[in-house]
Amino acid sequence: MLIVADNLTAATPSVGTAMTARDTHFIRDLATRLRDAGADMLDLNLGFRSKGGSETAAWMVRETHEATGLPLCLDTADPDSMRAGLAAARDMAGPSGPATPWINSFSLEPKKIERILPLAAEYDAPIVGYCVRDVVPQSPEERLQVAVELVELADAAGVPRDRLYLDPILFPLATFQDDFQHVLSFFDSLPQLFDPPVRTMVGLSNVGHGLPAGKRQTVEAVVLPMLAALGLDAVLLNILNPQLRDTLAVLRGIEGRSVFSGADLLDR
Amino acid sequence: MLIVADNLTAATPSVGTAMTARDTHFIRDLATRLRDAGADMLDLNLGFRSKGGSETAAWMVRETHEATGLPLCLDTADPDSMRAGLAAARDMAGPSGPATPWINSFSLEPKKIERILPLAAEYDAPIVGYCVRDVVPQSPEERLQVAVELVELADAAGVPRDRLYLDPILFPLATFQDDFQHVLSFFDSLPQLFDPPVRTMVGLSNVGHGLPAGKRQTVEAVVLPMLAALGLDAVLLNILNPQLRDTLAVLRGIEGRSVFSGADLLDR
Image (cartoon, rainbow over all chains, first blue to last red; front, side, top):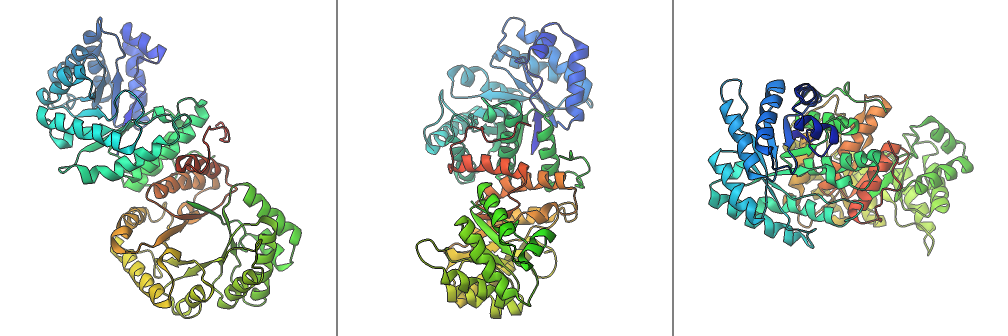
């Protein structure tokens, strides 16, 4: 399971300000801390800005990759910013340059299909597809129907299945209590629906929305192992959350990615 | 998922002493605390004593059921104690009497096959089968082979499949790091192996063996959601462990067993 840090997000005021101000020190320092905390990849959430978005995307790609050497995931709804980030990564190509960034995300929204999805084929980039329409799905079938439509669109756009990551979208457990069962059944159904198979990703932070921070951590620390057991390929999360870091240490041991001795767990 | 408290165990000195001394107050008080902490069933681990074991088993069945009204799981290697516990429960039968206790456990050990397994048919009792020979299985196939043998034995003994619980046996993660992947694949394989299906149970506490208490809790709190996602039917655990109680509160919300608001979680 690939661990993608969600911390470099314009939605956090200090990070958004540092992006706008081109605060190299702040961004590089945070990116380095995320790598040292165990991130395999950095999500660059560039926010909703459009004016200057392209320049910001390119600058963020250069700064964070140079600081960490990690692959990147570009997270913006603005097609121009997305393209600028992909182009900046390609311009850095070479032995020490970044792998092609992931595109996060497309959906059934026409603008995304027309202007974001084609970038995946043009840049040979992995792309994340959101398996919901505008609202919480009313049934497991509704989410799977969106998945089928996304896969058809990605096939038609020339995206190989092993570069297509479906995100079922987690809704807040405290508000939409029944929906997480639908997400679990989504993972059970995918292998039967798609051959060749697609991959999966979730953004974890939404599932604890509405709870105090310490309780969000607990909910995330339960939900993540469940999805890992069902074969989740990639997760977007707050890598600086201490409870999740412990959860990841155990999961990495179980996956055989690291030797597990318990030495790096907090003693609670 | 049925939550079985493992706390009433003779391996804990204070509990063992209370069993021997027939300390009604101690045993009833602990049993009540386990129920109030969320246990669905109480495991009565009677230890290895044989002298007086039958009387202890019968006394424990009466005291714990009268104190809590909960169903019980009888955990002893001594066939006479097992029979005495089952008989005591049957003698209490009636509107307020206990459901038939579970038998925990049988295995491929000849004494268990000859003297424990037949009690399941005689008393119409659910029974747990341990899917290992003497040592840690060297491959996923080895555990499944034991499972097949146990199911054949249980079929021959007249135990219905829906009263047969297979326990793959968790080994300490810090010592046998690779084995837990085999356990995960065990859950994937069971539905293909057995029709009608069997049920599953695990004893959780062994997986963190060798770690300090606080780190054991973390390992257990990762492993339990993974197994829950794979359809685990029953788990034996320390219900008084605060981190696990939080994990169970989230799992119960996800299962729809309780309304989930986060109110009963600790704020970390």
